[in-house]
Amino acid sequence: MKAIADVCVIPIGIGVSVSKEVTACERIFAEAGLKSRLHAYGTNIEGEWDDVMAAIKRCHETLHGMGVARISTNIRIGTRTDRAQTMDDKIRSVEEKLKG
Amino acid sequence: MKAIADVCVIPIGIGVSVSKEVTACERIFAEAGLKSRLHAYGTNIEGEWDDVMAAIKRCHETLHGMGVARISTNIRIGTRTDRAQTMDDKIRSVEEKLKG
Amino acid sequence: MKAIADVCVIPIGIGVSVSKEVTACERIFAEAGLKSRLHAYGTNIEGEWDDVMAAIKRCHETLHGMGVARISTNIRIGTRTDRAQTMDDKIRSVEEKLKG
Amino acid sequence: MKAIADVCVIPIGIGVSVSKEVTACERIFAEAGLKSRLHAYGTNIEGEWDDVMAAIKRCHETLHGMGVARISTNIRIGTRTDRAQTMDDKIRSVEEKLKG
Image 1: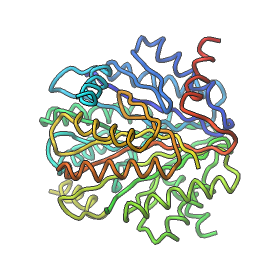
Image 2: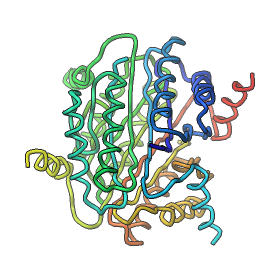
Image 3: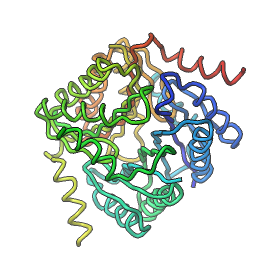
Image 4: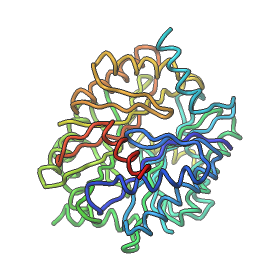
């Protein structure tokens, strides 16, 4: 089952800056071979459901290993059976209508 | 890794009423032996990370099997290593302060 | 415009325990006269869109005033025009199907 | 109060394709003079809290006016008092660490 997800991992209790932890998650998504794209409030990820979810779990394990005691993650995940659709398809579909 | 999650599954394109699909998800959480509690905008789930995520995946598979072509799910999932904490602990901790 | 919302306010950088801040938000929802119900990963709120959103803004202002330097909030908010629906209606609709 | 938000508006009950409605929201963010950037699972928005929230409300009103009977929106919204931070700052901060 293919999925497009958006993930926002929030380390709690480590201070106001969380970019070191977000960077660690980006590396995990890249190493997992997932197509991913960072934005200002999370990361888009495209891949098999199991691979996407395994990478998110690894973010929690890795951050806890780095000393983060508490993590709260928000995930949006979408699947569809009517047709294949990539992250780029979703954006293109809106951008074409914006021009039209 | 124990997790507390909150899941809101949205079937898209099937009409305005989604309670049949939400009910199917509730049954999946119960059959998975997960501690879960429905609220007005999702369901709290407590359990092992893998069990929680497997149940959410099963919601997508089951709803697609029921003819829902597109699903968008929002998940909040939290883990902590400093201490064990249940859903009831989280609520009690706030309710005590409200009385205090 | 009536709305049903679910709000999860996460104070960042203040330590692992956030129940004092969650309690402050609960008080704000109650003082605003909104129908609200705490669960293990957020709070359901029912009311006019503007009142719900004003209360959430007040949570941010109040927590910043308490010394929280950074806050990340996740909101689910739903509106519908086909019929009036309360938080209790949403839950009842699923619970009846679970029994059926 | 400045905010960085991420908004995912889901029209329910209109069919599987939602790009027309997402496009209408993009136009609303642009007309509101907000800095916004579409991604594959939502839109980043930067601006004053009230302006961001007014634009999201307008999305609901506009989509209902287009005949969408039910809408469920997921919002992440962050504020901080320790320093000013833009959407670009957030991304740059992670990208620099990825190179480092």
